[in-house]
Image (cartoon, rainbow, N blue to C red):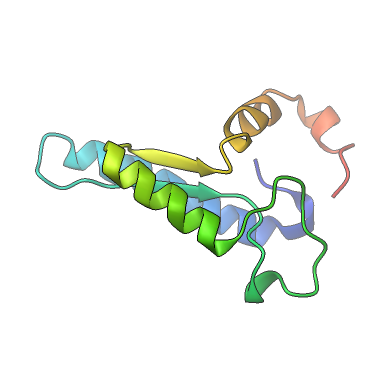
Length: 103
């Protein structure tokens, strides 16, 4: 779900996520593998000066999770793992409740 504070960036990420999911389906059965990495807030140059969000990660943590997922043959990986149930729960919130959440 896209947040109002950065809906352009969030929309781009959501679009890329959808594209990768479709591409993975199109490539199913071929020898090509696709790994969709879903990081949350990553502490780095792009986020310098911003307050870290809950469940933030470092580039090193994202890299480690990516390598681990590749070795295990996964199709997607959330970094950190706790984000998967968090975002699944957020998807189920009604729009009226979603709008009341802090930016």
